[in-house]
Length: 456
Ligand SMILES: *Cc1c(COP(=O)(O)O)cnc(C)c1O
Image 1 (tube, rainbow, N blue to C red):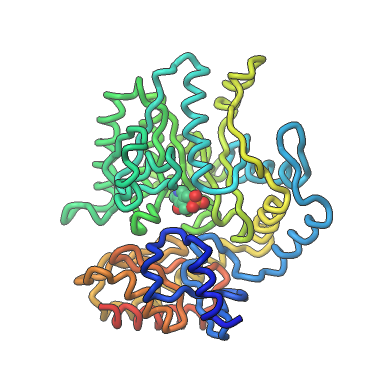
Image 2: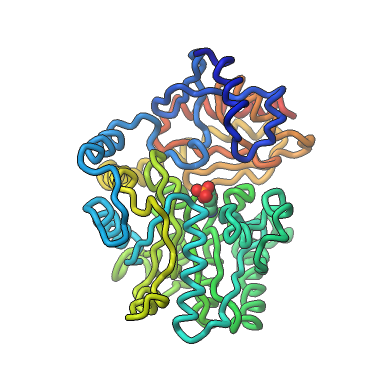
């Protein structure tokens, strides 16, 4: 069927996410038929470079033989079984591997990122209740943070367009100043500014800790909030403050996990300043590698976890948290369930994804790719842009003097160039699959240049 035919049927029957459907009266939907590597192909044979990894989920390109084969092999054995009272090899192996990678040993599964946030919030609250501190029931997050859009997750999210309409439905939470380096004073370093924000955090926590359960944060990059990046010292300080005042730190690595920021998990970078190690006894290079568990009591994972193949999310936590639920009384157990918890097909895709990381030196290759992207991106400097910033396989810049509607225009112009871009306000970002080649990087940057120029 042609693009036109499918488009009309889609508008009749499908309610698309994050979309004012009326805009599609004038603005066409794009029916995609197949994907290959970084490319998406529509029914008319037009192709688009997937510059945002299909909403940050795809890691190694579309139609990846190894992930596909893993799912097919699992499909011949067991497509699904409930995870209450039953277990299976893929979920056990995946949990063991994630424990090894993060230092957090107990994995609870769901199918999407927002549910992972809900699980971490509920688990934290329930931990304190089981520990005789039921007043510790409130949560704090950063200004401009994004943790998903179900009611609990939206309560700790701070993006006005998603939140304001539903505000009457949400629980109260407080937002701490974001360590986003763009907010620093002139002459103030990113590190000094991060420390100033950490002092504000401490100030709030010291006054409210008896009622606080947890602080939830997107480590290193606040993605949906416009790819806002901060100095890793903030994570060190946040950990120390959470320990001192006995509140949990929830690392929402739904977007930044699995190599996106340069390390397997963004929390690992909290050690990048050896002068102020989180745990002095574990100075970098000694003892053992940096672990998520040095920073976080909970980590939320999703998006890239299956390489972009199937919906899956996980919350991993500490022995301490787990033990507080281990009891004869059912009500002290964690009370949460999803029908597709630990789906074997999704777990098999996740295992294939982790195997690719192990076998193909992905993080090393990404360092080379990220450096190449940075080098090529200098050609954007003749455009009116500011704060061109990069963290691993995320490059972002703010377009100056952009008119209202810039994001939409830029998106449309990029599509004409054969590139899928989805600017957030005046922030244009590139977040391609890790498998992108040099020629494809060149294509992506040149098309981005054109799209920004034409959208201004
Ligand atoms: C995408 C995202 C979520 C929500 O994940 P969904 O699968 O879209 O519900 C939560 N937190 C962060 C940081 C995200 O980027």
